[in-house]
Image (cartoon, rainbow, N blue to C red; front, side, top):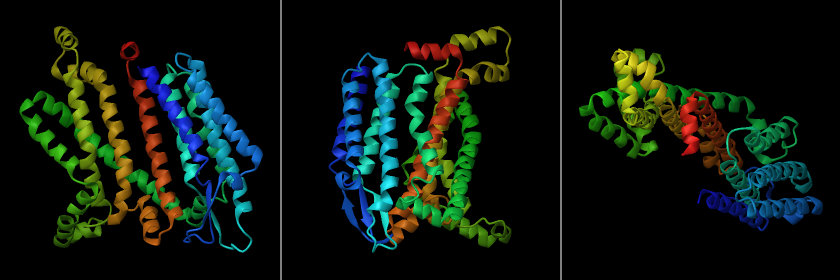
Length: 394
Protein backbone atom coordinates (compact mmCIF):
# COMPACT_ATOMS: atom_id res chain seq x y z
CA UNK A 1 0.00 0.00 0.00
CA UNK A 2 2.87 2.38 0.77
CA UNK A 3 4.23 2.00 -2.75
CA UNK A 4 0.85 2.81 -4.31
CA UNK A 5 0.60 5.92 -2.12
CA UNK A 6 4.05 7.09 -3.19
CA UNK A 7 3.18 6.56 -6.85
CA UNK A 8 0.00 8.57 -6.43
CA UNK A 9 1.89 11.44 -4.83
CA UNK A 10 4.33 11.49 -7.76
CA UNK A 11 1.53 11.43 -10.34
CA UNK A 12 -0.26 14.23 -8.46
CA UNK A 13 2.94 16.23 -8.82
CA UNK A 14 3.05 15.52 -12.56
CA UNK A 15 -0.58 16.59 -13.01
CA UNK A 16 0.09 19.74 -10.97
CA UNK A 17 3.11 20.55 -13.13
CA UNK A 18 1.13 20.31 -16.36
CA UNK A 19 -1.78 22.31 -14.90
CA UNK A 20 0.70 25.07 -13.99
CA UNK A 21 1.35 25.64 -17.70
CA UNK A 22 -2.21 26.95 -18.06
CA UNK A 23 -1.70 29.60 -15.37
CA UNK A 24 0.43 32.79 -15.55
CA UNK A 25 4.17 32.39 -15.29
CA UNK A 26 4.62 35.96 -14.05
CA UNK A 27 2.83 39.22 -13.44
CA UNK A 28 4.23 42.41 -14.99
CA UNK A 29 3.57 45.45 -12.81
CA UNK A 30 4.35 49.14 -13.42
CA UNK A 31 5.33 49.56 -9.73
CA UNK A 32 5.66 47.54 -6.53
CA UNK A 33 2.08 48.36 -5.48
CA UNK A 34 0.27 48.15 -8.82
CA UNK A 35 -1.73 45.08 -9.84
CA UNK A 36 -0.10 44.46 -13.20
CA UNK A 37 -0.88 42.10 -16.07
CA UNK A 38 -0.36 38.31 -16.23
CA UNK A 39 2.14 36.79 -18.64
CA UNK A 40 1.81 33.17 -19.73
CA UNK A 41 4.51 30.60 -20.28
CA UNK A 42 4.41 30.97 -24.06
CA UNK A 43 4.92 34.75 -23.89
CA UNK A 44 7.39 34.61 -21.01
CA UNK A 45 9.85 31.90 -22.08
CA UNK A 46 11.68 30.98 -25.28
CA UNK A 47 9.99 28.13 -27.15
CA UNK A 48 12.96 25.82 -26.61
CA UNK A 49 12.87 26.32 -22.85
CA UNK A 50 9.12 25.70 -22.69
CA UNK A 51 9.60 22.54 -24.76
CA UNK A 52 12.36 21.42 -22.36
CA UNK A 53 10.06 21.90 -19.34
CA UNK A 54 7.29 19.87 -21.00
CA UNK A 55 9.80 17.16 -21.91
CA UNK A 56 11.07 17.01 -18.32
CA UNK A 57 7.51 16.57 -17.02
CA UNK A 58 6.85 13.83 -19.56
CA UNK A 59 10.00 12.03 -18.40
CA UNK A 60 8.90 12.37 -14.75
CA UNK A 61 5.45 11.06 -15.69
CA UNK A 62 6.85 7.97 -17.42
CA UNK A 63 9.29 7.29 -14.57
CA UNK A 64 6.51 7.67 -11.99
CA UNK A 65 4.22 5.28 -13.82
CA UNK A 66 6.80 2.50 -13.77
CA UNK A 67 8.62 3.35 -10.53
CA UNK A 68 6.58 1.05 -8.26
CA UNK A 69 9.10 -1.42 -6.89
CA UNK A 70 11.87 0.20 -8.98
CA UNK A 71 13.78 2.48 -6.62
CA UNK A 72 16.19 3.60 -9.34
CA UNK A 73 13.27 5.01 -11.38
CA UNK A 74 11.95 6.87 -8.32
CA UNK A 75 15.44 8.29 -7.83
CA UNK A 76 15.55 9.45 -11.45
CA UNK A 77 12.10 11.05 -11.14
CA UNK A 78 13.12 12.92 -7.97
CA UNK A 79 16.35 14.17 -9.53
CA UNK A 80 14.47 15.35 -12.63
CA UNK A 81 12.07 17.23 -10.33
CA UNK A 82 15.08 19.18 -9.06
CA UNK A 83 16.04 20.02 -12.64
CA UNK A 84 12.53 21.38 -13.31
CA UNK A 85 12.81 23.72 -10.32
CA UNK A 86 16.22 25.03 -11.37
CA UNK A 87 15.23 25.51 -15.03
CA UNK A 88 12.11 27.49 -14.10
CA UNK A 89 13.98 29.63 -11.57
CA UNK A 90 16.90 30.38 -13.88
CA UNK A 91 14.79 31.31 -16.88
CA UNK A 92 12.36 33.48 -14.96
CA UNK A 93 15.33 35.41 -13.57
CA UNK A 94 16.89 35.69 -17.02
CA UNK A 95 13.68 36.75 -18.77
CA UNK A 96 12.51 39.19 -16.08
CA UNK A 97 14.23 42.33 -17.45
CA UNK A 98 13.17 41.43 -21.01
CA UNK A 99 9.50 41.19 -20.02
CA UNK A 100 9.31 44.75 -18.70
CA UNK A 101 8.10 47.44 -21.17
CA UNK A 102 10.43 50.42 -21.56
CA UNK A 103 7.90 52.82 -20.05
CA UNK A 104 7.86 50.83 -16.79
CA UNK A 105 10.70 52.72 -15.13
CA UNK A 106 9.88 51.27 -11.71
CA UNK A 107 8.39 48.06 -13.06
CA UNK A 108 8.44 44.72 -11.31
CA UNK A 109 8.23 41.11 -12.49
CA UNK A 110 6.54 38.96 -9.85
CA UNK A 111 6.21 35.16 -10.03
CA UNK A 112 2.69 34.18 -11.04
CA UNK A 113 0.37 31.40 -9.91
CA UNK A 114 1.73 29.04 -12.57
CA UNK A 115 5.28 29.53 -11.29
CA UNK A 116 4.35 28.58 -7.72
CA UNK A 117 2.19 25.68 -8.85
CA UNK A 118 5.03 24.37 -11.02
CA UNK A 119 7.43 24.41 -8.06
CA UNK A 120 4.78 22.76 -5.89
CA UNK A 121 4.35 19.93 -8.39
CA UNK A 122 8.10 19.35 -8.57
CA UNK A 123 8.29 19.31 -4.78
CA UNK A 124 5.59 16.61 -4.64
CA UNK A 125 7.67 14.48 -7.01
CA UNK A 126 10.73 14.97 -4.79
CA UNK A 127 8.75 13.98 -1.69
CA UNK A 128 7.47 10.85 -3.43
CA UNK A 129 11.01 9.91 -4.44
CA UNK A 130 12.29 10.41 -0.88
CA UNK A 131 9.58 8.09 0.44
CA UNK A 132 10.40 5.45 -2.17
CA UNK A 133 14.18 5.52 -1.72
CA UNK A 134 15.32 3.19 1.09
CA UNK A 135 17.95 4.08 3.63
CA UNK A 136 19.84 7.34 3.92
CA UNK A 137 22.69 6.96 1.45
CA UNK A 138 23.80 8.93 -1.60
CA UNK A 139 20.42 8.50 -3.29
CA UNK A 140 18.63 10.74 -0.80
CA UNK A 141 21.27 13.41 -1.31
CA UNK A 142 20.78 13.18 -5.07
CA UNK A 143 17.05 13.69 -4.59
CA UNK A 144 17.05 16.44 -1.99
CA UNK A 145 20.23 18.50 -2.47
CA UNK A 146 20.43 19.71 -6.14
CA UNK A 147 17.54 22.22 -5.98
CA UNK A 148 18.61 23.96 -2.72
CA UNK A 149 22.25 23.95 -3.81
CA UNK A 150 21.32 25.31 -7.23
CA UNK A 151 19.17 28.01 -5.63
CA UNK A 152 22.15 29.15 -3.54
CA UNK A 153 24.29 29.33 -6.71
CA UNK A 154 21.61 31.30 -8.58
CA UNK A 155 21.19 33.73 -5.70
CA UNK A 156 24.93 34.14 -5.22
CA UNK A 157 25.49 34.67 -8.94
CA UNK A 158 22.82 37.37 -9.16
CA UNK A 159 20.76 35.42 -11.71
CA UNK A 160 17.52 36.11 -9.81
CA UNK A 161 18.09 39.73 -8.80
CA UNK A 162 15.51 41.09 -11.30
CA UNK A 163 12.66 39.13 -9.69
CA UNK A 164 10.49 41.39 -7.55
CA UNK A 165 11.03 39.61 -4.22
CA UNK A 166 14.79 39.91 -4.58
CA UNK A 167 14.42 43.60 -5.41
CA UNK A 168 12.54 44.08 -2.14
CA UNK A 169 15.39 42.27 -0.40
CA UNK A 170 18.05 44.53 -1.96
CA UNK A 171 16.18 47.61 -0.69
CA UNK A 172 15.86 46.23 2.85
CA UNK A 173 18.98 44.10 3.11
CA UNK A 174 20.28 45.38 6.47
CA UNK A 175 16.80 45.31 8.06
CA UNK A 176 16.22 41.83 6.67
CA UNK A 177 19.44 40.51 8.23
CA UNK A 178 18.50 42.04 11.56
CA UNK A 179 14.98 40.59 11.59
CA UNK A 180 16.15 37.23 10.26
CA UNK A 181 18.57 36.73 13.15
CA UNK A 182 16.00 38.14 15.56
CA UNK A 183 13.53 35.51 14.31
CA UNK A 184 16.13 32.80 14.87
CA UNK A 185 16.97 34.07 18.34
CA UNK A 186 13.34 34.21 19.50
CA UNK A 187 12.43 30.81 18.01
CA UNK A 188 15.40 28.83 19.27
CA UNK A 189 15.43 30.54 22.67
CA UNK A 190 11.74 29.73 23.21
CA UNK A 191 12.24 26.07 22.25
CA UNK A 192 15.40 25.85 24.37
CA UNK A 193 13.57 27.13 27.45
CA UNK A 194 10.55 24.92 26.69
CA UNK A 195 12.86 21.89 26.46
CA UNK A 196 14.54 22.79 29.76
CA UNK A 197 11.12 22.93 31.43
CA UNK A 198 9.25 20.25 29.48
CA UNK A 199 11.72 17.37 29.63
CA UNK A 200 11.97 17.15 33.45
CA UNK A 201 8.23 17.84 33.72
CA UNK A 202 7.53 14.88 31.40
CA UNK A 203 9.72 12.63 33.57
CA UNK A 204 8.05 13.97 36.71
CA UNK A 205 4.48 13.20 35.60
CA UNK A 206 5.60 9.74 34.46
CA UNK A 207 6.78 9.03 37.99
CA UNK A 208 3.97 10.92 39.75
CA UNK A 209 0.84 9.77 37.91
CA UNK A 210 -1.48 12.01 39.92
CA UNK A 211 -0.01 15.06 38.17
CA UNK A 212 -0.52 13.65 34.67
CA UNK A 213 -4.09 14.90 34.13
CA UNK A 214 -3.65 18.48 35.46
CA UNK A 215 -0.40 19.02 33.52
CA UNK A 216 -1.84 17.73 30.25
CA UNK A 217 -5.06 19.67 30.86
CA UNK A 218 -3.12 22.94 31.16
CA UNK A 219 -0.82 22.32 28.19
CA UNK A 220 -3.66 21.10 25.99
CA UNK A 221 -5.66 24.20 26.93
CA UNK A 222 -2.76 26.40 25.83
CA UNK A 223 -2.79 24.68 22.44
CA UNK A 224 -6.49 25.40 21.95
CA UNK A 225 -6.03 29.16 22.47
CA UNK A 226 -5.34 30.90 19.11
CA UNK A 227 -1.74 32.09 18.89
CA UNK A 228 -2.71 35.72 18.35
CA UNK A 229 -5.01 35.66 21.40
CA UNK A 230 -2.29 34.10 23.56
CA UNK A 231 0.12 36.90 22.58
CA UNK A 232 -2.52 39.45 23.51
CA UNK A 233 -3.30 37.87 26.89
CA UNK A 234 0.12 38.81 28.23
CA UNK A 235 0.01 42.48 27.19
CA UNK A 236 -2.17 43.73 30.07
CA UNK A 237 -0.52 41.88 33.00
CA UNK A 238 3.02 42.62 31.81
CA UNK A 239 2.22 46.29 31.17
CA UNK A 240 0.82 46.53 34.72
CA UNK A 241 3.93 44.89 36.20
CA UNK A 242 6.26 47.19 34.24
CA UNK A 243 4.43 50.24 35.64
CA UNK A 244 4.50 48.78 39.15
CA UNK A 245 8.21 47.91 38.98
CA UNK A 246 10.20 50.54 36.98
CA UNK A 247 13.26 48.24 36.96
CA UNK A 248 11.40 45.84 34.65
CA UNK A 249 10.70 48.70 32.24
CA UNK A 250 14.37 49.70 32.27
CA UNK A 251 15.29 46.10 31.40
CA UNK A 252 12.99 46.25 28.37
CA UNK A 253 10.25 44.11 29.91
CA UNK A 254 6.77 45.41 29.23
CA UNK A 255 3.39 44.67 27.73
CA UNK A 256 4.87 44.61 24.23
CA UNK A 257 8.18 43.43 22.85
CA UNK A 258 10.12 40.23 23.27
CA UNK A 259 8.88 39.18 26.75
CA UNK A 260 5.17 38.48 25.97
CA UNK A 261 6.23 36.86 22.70
CA UNK A 262 8.68 34.55 24.48
CA UNK A 263 6.15 33.57 27.16
CA UNK A 264 3.49 32.72 24.58
CA UNK A 265 5.89 30.75 22.39
CA UNK A 266 7.25 28.79 25.36
CA UNK A 267 3.73 27.80 26.43
CA UNK A 268 2.92 26.69 22.87
CA UNK A 269 6.13 24.66 22.61
CA UNK A 270 5.66 22.77 25.88
CA UNK A 271 2.97 20.25 24.92
CA UNK A 272 4.85 18.23 22.23
CA UNK A 273 7.95 18.03 24.44
CA UNK A 274 6.09 16.97 27.60
CA UNK A 275 3.84 14.54 25.72
CA UNK A 276 6.69 12.84 23.85
CA UNK A 277 8.87 12.63 26.98
CA UNK A 278 6.03 11.06 28.96
CA UNK A 279 5.12 8.65 26.14
CA UNK A 280 8.74 7.64 25.50
CA UNK A 281 9.16 6.58 29.12
CA UNK A 282 5.78 4.86 29.19
CA UNK A 283 6.54 2.59 26.21
CA UNK A 284 10.01 1.55 27.39
CA UNK A 285 10.48 -2.18 27.71
CA UNK A 286 10.01 -2.90 31.42
CA UNK A 287 12.37 -5.89 31.16
CA UNK A 288 15.23 -3.56 30.21
CA UNK A 289 14.55 -1.35 33.23
CA UNK A 290 14.26 -4.38 35.50
CA UNK A 291 17.59 -5.65 34.19
CA UNK A 292 19.16 -2.34 35.23
CA UNK A 293 17.65 -2.63 38.67
CA UNK A 294 18.95 -6.18 38.89
CA UNK A 295 22.45 -4.85 38.21
CA UNK A 296 22.10 -2.62 41.27
CA UNK A 297 21.41 0.68 39.54
CA UNK A 298 19.71 3.39 41.59
CA UNK A 299 16.86 5.53 40.09
CA UNK A 300 19.30 8.23 38.96
CA UNK A 301 21.52 5.73 37.15
CA UNK A 302 18.48 4.09 35.56
CA UNK A 303 17.31 7.47 34.30
CA UNK A 304 20.59 8.63 32.74
CA UNK A 305 22.07 5.30 31.63
CA UNK A 306 19.01 3.38 30.41
CA UNK A 307 15.75 5.32 30.22
CA UNK A 308 16.92 8.62 28.69
CA UNK A 309 19.18 7.06 26.00
CA UNK A 310 16.36 4.74 24.89
CA UNK A 311 13.72 7.50 25.06
CA UNK A 312 15.90 10.10 23.33
CA UNK A 313 14.64 9.58 19.73
CA UNK A 314 11.00 10.13 20.70
CA UNK A 315 11.91 13.08 22.95
CA UNK A 316 13.81 14.70 20.08
CA UNK A 317 10.80 14.12 17.83
CA UNK A 318 8.75 16.23 20.25
CA UNK A 319 11.41 18.95 20.21
CA UNK A 320 11.39 18.77 16.41
CA UNK A 321 7.62 19.33 16.35
CA UNK A 322 7.92 22.25 18.77
CA UNK A 323 10.73 23.85 16.80
CA UNK A 324 8.91 23.77 13.47
CA UNK A 325 5.74 25.06 15.13
CA UNK A 326 7.61 27.85 16.92
CA UNK A 327 9.41 29.04 13.79
CA UNK A 328 5.99 29.62 12.22
CA UNK A 329 4.35 31.14 15.31
CA UNK A 330 7.22 33.60 15.77
CA UNK A 331 5.94 35.40 12.68
CA UNK A 332 3.03 36.68 14.79
CA UNK A 333 5.45 38.13 17.35
CA UNK A 334 5.92 41.15 15.10
CA UNK A 335 2.38 42.26 15.94
CA UNK A 336 3.41 43.00 19.54
CA UNK A 337 6.73 44.62 18.71
CA UNK A 338 9.03 41.62 19.15
CA UNK A 339 10.35 41.80 15.58
CA UNK A 340 11.25 38.87 13.39
CA UNK A 341 10.35 38.12 9.79
CA UNK A 342 6.69 38.84 10.54
CA UNK A 343 7.63 42.54 10.31
CA UNK A 344 7.76 42.24 6.52
CA UNK A 345 4.58 40.17 6.37
CA UNK A 346 2.49 42.73 8.23
CA UNK A 347 4.13 45.70 6.50
CA UNK A 348 3.28 44.07 3.19
CA UNK A 349 -0.31 43.46 4.25
CA UNK A 350 -0.64 47.09 5.32
CA UNK A 351 0.77 48.38 2.02
CA UNK A 352 -0.89 45.73 -0.17
CA UNK A 353 2.64 44.88 -1.35
CA UNK A 354 2.66 41.17 -2.21
CA UNK A 355 6.42 41.01 -2.73
CA UNK A 356 7.04 42.37 0.76
CA UNK A 357 4.75 39.68 2.18
CA UNK A 358 6.73 37.02 0.31
CA UNK A 359 9.98 38.49 1.65
CA UNK A 360 8.78 37.52 5.11
CA UNK A 361 6.90 34.31 4.29
CA UNK A 362 9.47 32.52 2.10
CA UNK A 363 12.34 32.66 4.65
CA UNK A 364 9.98 31.40 7.39
CA UNK A 365 9.05 28.42 5.21
CA UNK A 366 12.72 27.81 4.46
CA UNK A 367 13.66 28.01 8.15
CA UNK A 368 10.87 25.59 9.09
CA UNK A 369 12.00 23.07 6.47
CA UNK A 370 15.67 23.38 7.49
CA UNK A 371 14.77 23.02 11.17
CA UNK A 372 12.70 19.93 10.41
CA UNK A 373 15.41 18.30 8.28
CA UNK A 374 18.16 19.24 10.73
CA UNK A 375 16.29 17.69 13.65
CA UNK A 376 15.47 14.65 11.52
CA UNK A 377 19.18 14.13 10.84
CA UNK A 378 20.03 14.66 14.53
CA UNK A 379 17.42 12.09 15.57
CA UNK A 380 18.86 9.57 13.11
CA UNK A 381 22.41 10.15 14.36
CA UNK A 382 21.45 9.81 18.03
CA UNK A 383 19.17 6.80 17.62
CA UNK A 384 20.91 3.57 18.76
CA UNK A 385 21.69 1.25 15.85
CA UNK A 386 19.52 -1.50 17.30
CA UNK A 387 16.47 0.79 17.32
CA UNK A 388 17.25 1.94 13.76
CA UNK A 389 17.33 -1.64 12.52
CA UNK A 390 14.09 -2.42 14.37
CA UNK A 391 12.41 0.63 12.84
CA UNK A 392 13.49 -0.35 9.31
CA UNK A 393 12.10 -3.87 9.81
CA UNK A 394 8.76 -2.47 10.99
